[in-house]
Amino acid sequence: MSNVRNGIELLVTLQLALELMDEYKLKGRAKNTANMFKDALESDIMQNYHRVYKEDPEMLTNSLNFKNQMIEDIASLSEADSILLSDFIHKFIENIEEVREKKILIFDKLI
Image 1 (spheres, rainbow, N blue to C red):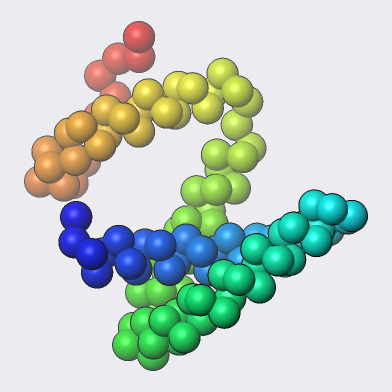
Image 2 (image 1 turned 90 degrees about the horizontal axis):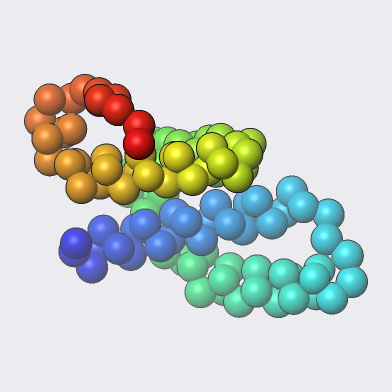
């Protein structure tokens, strides 16, 4: 993994976290802690976020939308289904080159 890729992934993930935090109506200590974290992140990443957005707004927007959808999908699963998904993701990652080459995904069996 390159440092550039890691930087962009971190930037996109943190921006998504900021957007999700805005949607939650936190109270008390949790709200204060979340706001402190949010403020620290915003001051650190916004300049880079805007730089990446200026270079390729469509890529950044699509990346945020895909990650947000995955988060919503995972959050909607039961704990048992989350475990099954985790196993699937691990197998997917282990075979990523084959998946990319064939551009298909096959479920052969669940154990």
